[in-house]
Image (tube, rainbow, N blue to C red; front, side):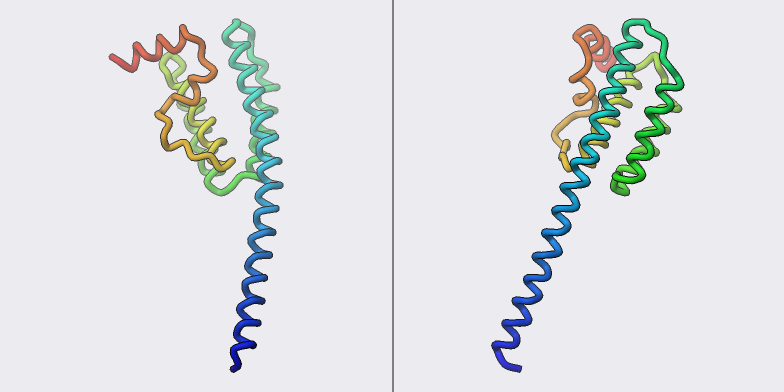
Length: 150
């Protein structure tokens, strides 16, 4: 086999690999846009519900259930396998949550981390609960800090 044929074959293989990588990047970008939109909607709704609870407003269970159902559909369509596994764990955390402790904050933190991981963020430098603290006011933070010190 001549050198020219080998070079031609290697060039062709290199071009095919490049096209495959380019197509995967385009697909990932489209998925990223769609996932980010869905996750943004869910987080916005979740925060609105938390604010309503904080102000003593009753929870609309039908609306909350519909929101969760839409989120599940989106995860099924757009989520990576790890996101699906994390969401199952998140549902278990919600079902077994003790509302009197810091569990709601840690559950919110878990939700935020799983969404960020699915969007490609690496949060290894963050401690447990730090993401959820973004939405907490000073009074709730001081209560949680006191509980952590005990």
